[in-house]
Image (cartoon, rainbow, N blue to C red; front, side):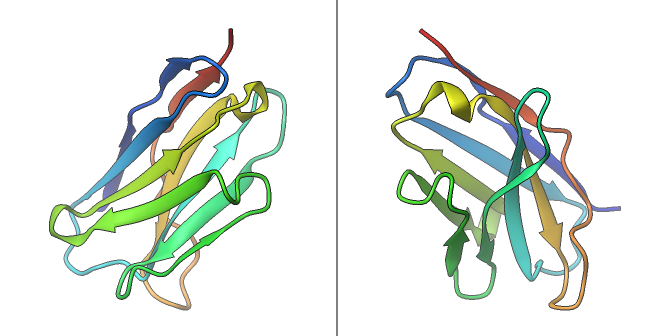
Length: 119
């Protein structure tokens, strides 16, 4: 059974940076893509961005484009979300997920890690 575990969230001030990690375990083969979503309190889940596993090509949603960088360490089955210039509106539960093939839905999902941006 594939499981994902996020870490690295916490309380930061506006303008700070933060790097989130997501470790995949139980993999028998590499995923096609891994992606990050976030869900602010009381709002709908939002796509932050993702990364194609084979070549590391990354793509981003509008809200954090220019402030977020997604990378991966294939040897560790880990994907990272580097976030800079954080704003209070970035406060959310951040979740990672994976699609195991080009035709697969996003599954499984991690439990999420809380990021709070406040002064």
